[in-house]
Image (cartoon, rainbow, N blue to C red; front, side):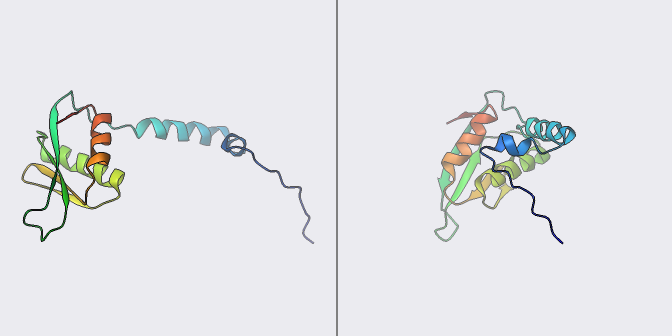
Length: 117
């Protein structure tokens, strides 16, 4: 026989968070702190441009002027692709993100302390 337990209506996410054990709550906040971008642009200037040349008319957002080692460029490209929800790659010292993602890319690069030209 199944017993009917009274249900509680939650009015906010804080009420729902109260159901989590304390160790889980602390773990979640530490993960949020780690999600901040670990790359510091140190006010270096980069250009964010839209390009269609040589791509059969398809648009690509280019981030030009990043002067990092290839591993760091791949990390930054991965963050940009995740933030934009688009594909992309690193080619010839520039990061390519598929589509017109200029505003999104500018936002995340500003958060990473780059100066956008």
